[in-house]
Image (cartoon, rainbow, N blue to C red; front, side, top):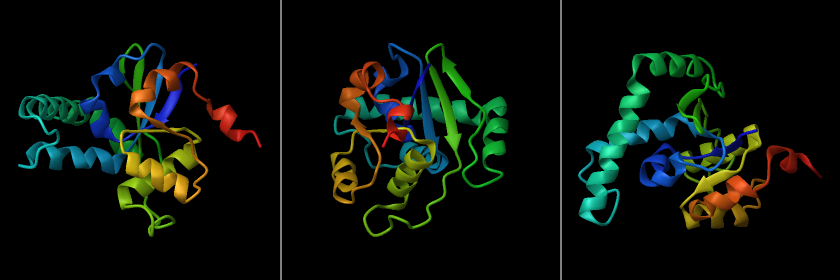
Length: 174
């Protein structure tokens, strides 16, 4: 059984270890975070503080964009974009990683506390009953302060989350 995580698309470009988990993983990616990749790739603003790291990550972002722009994958994405909250068919990356793109819609439910992307990540987590994987401490703090009933893992705890983390069934328990 694979572990499922809600994640922003850029994180799989920044953290290469996310593409080589010890167990099967399905990443649920809100579509708007894929659109952000195009902005990041062409922006003069660095993604990473170190110039070499930034060039490497922007190259990985380009590879990820090319993956999503591939005609076969693009057709799968178009199916998801046909209706709000529709997931795409699975997009296999390797033997242990699959992407599922979710046509998440920001409904302003958490608009006061979270920006639109954060809201889509949180709502996707709630709808899919899957924990969030992030590197944003500020987002984790907002989730805790707003008492949003989701599980969130720091990207640096990824192996723990994959091996010993909770499952969707755990989230359903009272």
